[in-house]
Amino acid sequence: MIGRLRGTVAEIGEEDALIDVLGVGYVVRCGARTLSRLPAIGEEAVLHIETQWSERSEDVV
Image (cartoon, rainbow, N blue to C red):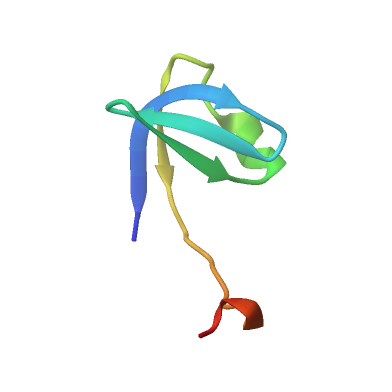
């Protein structure tokens, strides 16, 4: 599980951001407030990550 990402802001979308960490791009879904507080594209960001998932009935074997 990922707890923190430190990398360069590569893109900022409406619901997510792309963070480049040593050549690997991580898509981070976040709220509008968090997205608005990110540094500019090309600058370094540190994000604390909270992972959420759920098992849907079609995914259970």
